[in-house]
Image 1 (cartoon, rainbow, N blue to C red):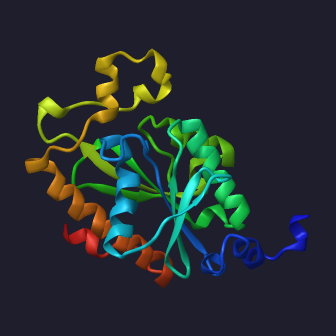
Image 2 (cartoon, rainbow, N blue to C red):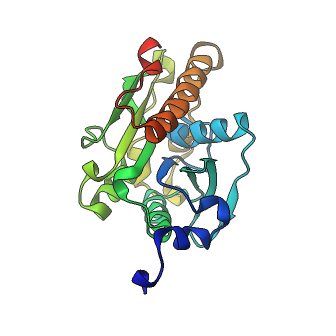
Length: 223
């Protein structure tokens, strides 16, 4: 059946605005806690959409909201919370849109990187992240797609909360203390302004990178 439709025709089933899409940017995060450190990838795309007046379209069958940054770049905001479901949502979008996984960039948190640091790479991730693990298993390797690891390491020791292990637990068995891991937000005075500047520059740079064929994030080097 797949051979009966061109890639553009497959995308057009979701709307004319998706017909020319060639690149995809996906924001990983917990939609229940969009301002948490764990959700920085999701937060980055939501800020980009708000700055540019983009309208998200909801597709329940995909488990994600979609919009286009330009006619070539699709933004994906998973609406699921569990890591397994998030990776499955990504697969549904990629398959239904007939996108090459090499043209996908996943934005995600990295607790091992200080705030203000970003690592854009195709190498396997070294810090545990369940959603990335599932996605890598789905496509055979973490090198199948590009990652933008966004540093969320706390500036102060008081905010040094690691959200990673909590991803492997079911919400129903979490203690109140463990739920705080998911709600851990950026400190307004010391962290939030820098984080906003970094992710705003990052999203603009990734879109410029995918549409121009450039090989480096030139503006990120000046941060």
